[in-house]
Amino acid sequence: MSTRRRALFAFVLALGLALFGLLARERDVLGLALPLALFAAVLVTSDALYRPSTLRVARELSASQVYEDEHVDVTLSATNEGEHDVWVSLCDTVPHGITVVLGDPALAGRLREGETVTRTYRVNASRGGHDQRQLLGTTWAPWGLAARDVTFSLQSTLTALPVFESLRGIEIRPRHVHAYAGSIRTGRAGSGLATLGCREYTPGDDIRRINWRASARRDDLIVNLYEQERMTDVNIIVDARAHMHLQIGEVKTFDLVVRGAAAIASHFLRQSNRVGLLVYGDTINWTFPGSGRLQMERLLHALALARPSNRLAFGKLRQIPTRLFAAGSQLVIFSTLGSREDADIPVQLAARGYSVLLIYPNGLGLERAALRPGPHDDLAERVMRLGQQATLSRLARAGATVVDWDLAEPLGVALHHVDRAVRGLRR
Image 1 (spheres, rainbow, N blue to C red):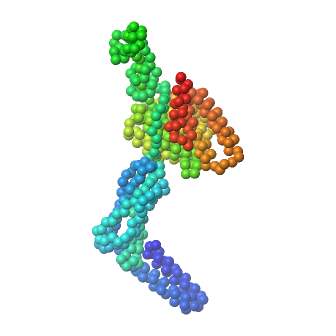
Image 2 (tube, one colour):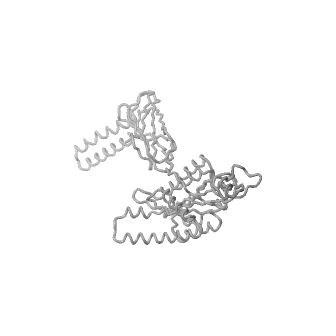
Image 3 (cartoon, one colour):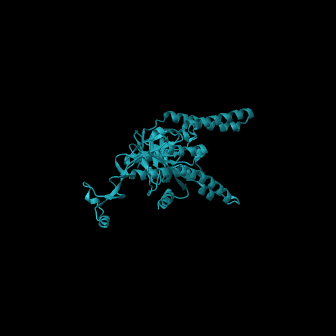
């Protein structure tokens, strides 16, 4: 409490005792009011004579951008630039989402003239952007009666990026590809690694493509045909509508979806594709397609700041701005499709020529594990799964590739099951 507040409190208390003593005609009560009034006068005098010393404070972060599972060291420093000693107590403001795991974000003690003291503490941040704007404190006079509350404006931003798994085995066949080399098979003969077929040798063919075994059987030169591999645009759509997500215990399904989107983006960027991101729910948070490590940083930063939203303007998936996506490109949609109208959107996108990969974040396993066992749990779960399977089957028949992702398992497991099923059908 500052000196002025203490003086005001003592004065009000003395005034109250004096009034009570006068009304009750009690000299002892009046005698109690005198020391309080004297103490208030001393506090006011001390505050008027006190000249606080000049302090210079700073906050430094060991890193401004980390992943969720990494720690950051925060260093506070205070320097007495005045002409006399000062007693100081400083406390750093820790915003919601940042947890102190080691040390203390407070600094207190005596600062001599020109002296600098430092304090380091370690924090862990949840996904998102966290701003630390102020440093609160109090300075005392050497005699201890006068005190001043001080506030320092220190702007520090810590961004915690989502962690993600490494995926493999995702095969897509978009209708539109670029002319640059990549990893997407086009079904046309050209330069590539996958064998497309064979044909007879014609003058001008590269002799390195001759299939000597087939040539020996046919008694004629046979050359291998390779499938063209090109790059394409992959646009990831994250359904950020709040009513599409749950919080089951400490697990938030939206955080799992964000991590899955980061894993998909990393996978297709490693394959030399151009990847874009649309977070649909609050505003049109659109990251234009690009490639390379810098694009991955852009996507991770956008996913780190993504939050579920209740905006009515984006209550339905029909508001997705398809004009942002190149014609015939690959769309990867993370959504639970809350209504029949939402379930028609992937069908319409496939009909417009887009290649659609729907990743359905299924939280039934997490919900079942969190609920107390009941007599009708199996029946209720079966009914829910039948409804989900009916919707997903209809989307698969319409031409979309569907991944039923059990959120209790990593995304890579669900993608592996779909890849095995597709390979089995081809055989």
